[in-house]
Image (cartoon, rainbow, N blue to C red; front, side, top):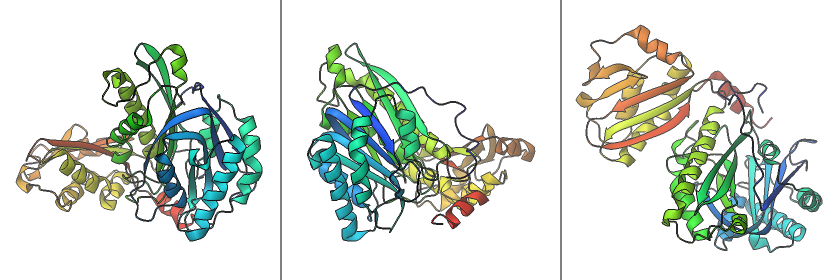
Length: 413
């Protein structure tokens, strides 16, 4: 964890209410460092519905494989998360470590290993000593409490400079339900779910199949529209759990994601996912500025997103932002290399409200002073009009600073 908190950190943190049906505990198991909190356990005393979205990396971590396999069962009783070791690219030892951890958790909670979900974050390629979990999980199960969200968020941090929390309420059939979420992530962040772990819990009563549709749809414009450095992690895990405790208030179980009763819940969930995703970008390693890149007028929404990511992932664009240099030529370059259709002579570019280029050349009213003033802001909007269709997308990124190189140059030491 770097010494100073990101200047883009929230000025205050959400007050996280307990969610009925889930308890949490943290412990220091000595995964990488002595006396550092490095394990988080979530316990569901009654079976909770579960949904998950994972990395698209072709080299996924052992815990990602394990979760994918258990997701088919649709039921969760325990989640064990560790920081300090990703348990990725660890071969047969990695698989054995997940099995041993799941065994320890299932014995502690009194459930099957198929109802346990695991996530790990940290260094790739180092074997994980799962025997370290065995000694702490039983006590964690006993000690776990509902009012523990902020501590839970702190336990999963690696190079993060602040814990990421968010909460929302919604109504399902007149019954108020709560949604709470935590996330971690600061580097190796790219769409396809970054080195990003996020756990969201609601007390709503929603079937696993419906929950999965809500989560999969919700990640598109949120977690899959953020990038810190274009690198997709081996370990990305976003999980959504529904404890069903709201049935005690008379909430009828929802089994179909298309049920109109879910409209308020869907909006609240998507808001929460967006909030967490943007907190991740605002904690980008070494970040000093947040950038929203909006592309309009592309051939399709998919094309717009690809062009947006080409701009957001460009080291030249990101270093220009870091240097507060209104070098719009770098945006032209990034549009041109995206592989999507673009017409140079229809292109228009804005930095904030300042149009810097139009119809394939510099804006006739261009003011270097006005464009530079935009670049000095902490939050910067770059907008590009392609002029070919109605496709639109917004992606979010941060600047690329010397500190990013320093953090990642000695990440393992």
